[in-house]
Every structure is written in C-alpha cells, then in structure tokens.
Image 1 (cartoon, rainbow, N blue to C red):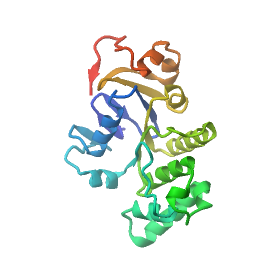
Image 2: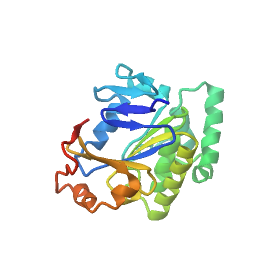
Image 3: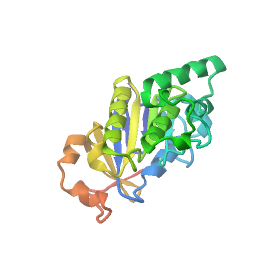
Image 4: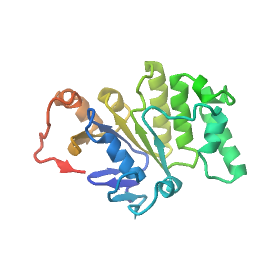
Length: 229
C-alpha cells in the first residue's frame, strides 16, 4: 500500500496521525503549505506526483486544511461557511453540510449563527468541519490547539482520533509537543527546515531533549546528520 503523502523524508499512511513538531521558525507551516501547493517542491499525494497540481486540484483530490487561527468567514453563518467550502453539486453539498452538522453537535446547535459570534472552540470545530466538506482523505492542521481550553482540546483530539480510525491520514503541526504526541502515533521533529528526529510518539515523549528543541534553544542532531526537507 502506497503512502497517502510523501514529501521529502516525511510520509504518512492512511489512518495515521503524525505530529509535526518544532518551535517558531522550524518550518512546520512551510511544509504544510508545500503540501497544499503554495510553495514549490516535490509532493506525492495518494501515490501520484502532485507537484504540478494547483492548490484547488490538490484540495479536490482529497486534501483538507485547517490553518492556524482558524480563518473562518466571520460574517457568514455556520451553514454558509460549510457551503462555501464545497465544490460538490448543490444536492450533495447540502447533504454534506447536514452530515457535518450532525458530526459536530456544537455546530448543529447553531447552524444559523454568524461565525464571529462563536467561541474559539466552536470556530475551530467549524474550521475542521469545513476542511472535510470535500471528503478529505488527508487532513493538515496548523497549530489547532492555539488559544483553546483543555476541555475543547480534548474534544478536538477525540474527533481526530475518530477520523483516523475511519482511515483519514492526519498531519498535526504543533508547538505543544506533549499534547500532540498523546494523540499521534509518530512524531517528526523539525529545526530550521530540517528533520532532526523521527520516532514513535511514546519514544519522543520519553526523550528529555525534546523540551529543549521545542523551546528553540538548541540544534538537535542526536542521530547524525539531519535531513533536508
């Protein structure tokens, strides 16, 4: 079985959650944006070279993106946000909206609320639902826990675990390594645009050097030469 995503030395399989770790400026967002097509670079999606595909084509092929800061359409309602994020025909789009409202009860309770009136947690769930409107097989999340209360983070991670169990591949970019590694099966650590460590989540959680790297105070290459993305 081929990987859902291959970029540089990073690969992700269907149903796998990979935590992309590193401090500010490590290259996490750049990697995600390269997968989306905002930057040039060789990217293999679903077994095929996607390097020449546009951002729209990559999204239509099955890539969903939840950007840092959520970036929902503040003046639109929950339902309108979801509808605007789908390229499906009208009937299928409405059905998909109803599915997302059922999957995220906190949104289903307020389908006609303007996005700017939602709490931070509700906006994050809206951003996640919006990323799935086209049936994403690969989800990219950039700092999704930023500014969220612990209970909301727990709910968010529970939903990501459910999506992964259903076969969705997930790349989770996080500065809060401890949180991310408790939902991910594997972690990839970046420093200055290079992979400096890749290991099982439990192994990284037990490594005392991880905290120093996440703080951005060291250049960590414990296993020899690091890899260029």
